[in-house]
Length: 548
Image 1 (tube, rainbow, N blue to C red):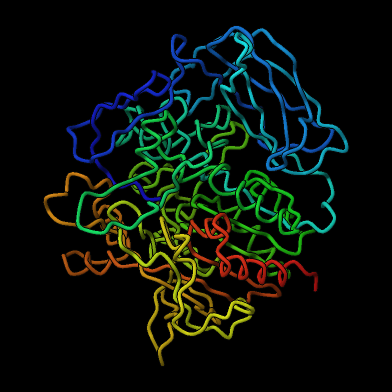
Image 2: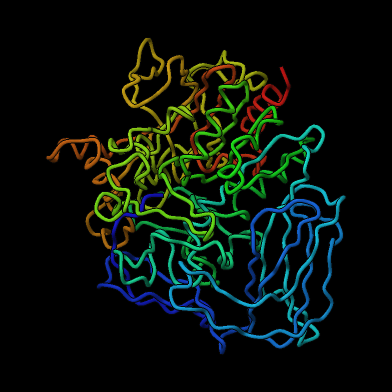
């Protein structure tokens, strides 16, 4: 998600002070901004982080914890899984630990609370640490953490799911700032260019209650009115991170795995940290899968995926918003993204490592070269004031393609609209129509041979009646940014750069191939049991999951 500047009002979350408000300029948007900052005197809560995000059997997981209660217990269980806990701590004495200045960039530095060595036979997957309050009989769950275990050899029959941990980090406002907003005085909107991995995930990124709204409002508005952001409003009322629905295990990877495992597919989960560190991490897998909101990537991650596909690997990307280049300082466990300020402030400004958009001409490495589509040629649909009455599904243009086998879909049919899969943030390419089908122009990095299978329309600017302007959260800032990189001065160019698309594409590269459904909300079609989204997903996984 791009982060167009908008002013914020003082927000006070009902029901406690676990979340602190950010105070900025006069109110312009209808939504308050807040961040999660621990308070010794706040409501019952516990916060936990681990020394790493990913482990293998035999490694020791070191947990660091702070809490407002005197006694807690911890359990660790595979998620999704539904089985018994693989570890239970029993009741432990606990304490509150203050956070250092600029903890969002520096990390917490808390003492070790507990260590656990991963058993040799522990299954690969995500593992949730649940923290319970042991000072009352209710034993309420007051905090969660997540780490990953991956066996040292591929699980038999497993595909690889690459978790979008860099995007989770970008949205993690725990301690006062993320790459979007916060209390950092050095950058606009208080955002931070440096984010530490040595801090907890914000509330809602790991675990969510059933029924928490998704990023796309469930119901299209039936008449003109103010822009609504159901998930943001729900988060404010219930004390969750502002953008829980936009980035995190709970909203995207977890429900995908729930569907996949229920349908007979096995996955090993690989973090983006591992993809960055080891260019060969995917080599034993016939297919690598990416889902949900997957926005932030390092050059090393892209190079690893490109080499994997060139060597015969297959990529299935059921994800959207491939937008920003980042750098990782692995020694300090810090993620770096200057974003809109990159040309002005990034120490590597003007180089190919600058942390701007991949489509920035100074980087000259558009995302379409890797995944077939670009973020800045797409962006929003059915989100707030962005195309709020968009169709919410993909129109099919090439029904003869193998991806649509068994769906019964024909030319001009739409699928996924009942489940709102065409929503939040989309990716597309420059295109023209020939004989009634979209064809890539190739001018924005689309690879030769790319086929557009289905598409819909998106926008980079909110719109509506003037009397409701105060409800808009993003305005046209993203269109202005795209125009500043790719357009020309003047209103006509800006209007052109307000227009985008979302696409389903397929292409061959080297000895491998790539299928991309350029939307963040594809997973909701699986959650809602949309038969078309499910069948297409099966077609891709079945074809790509076979070794040639």
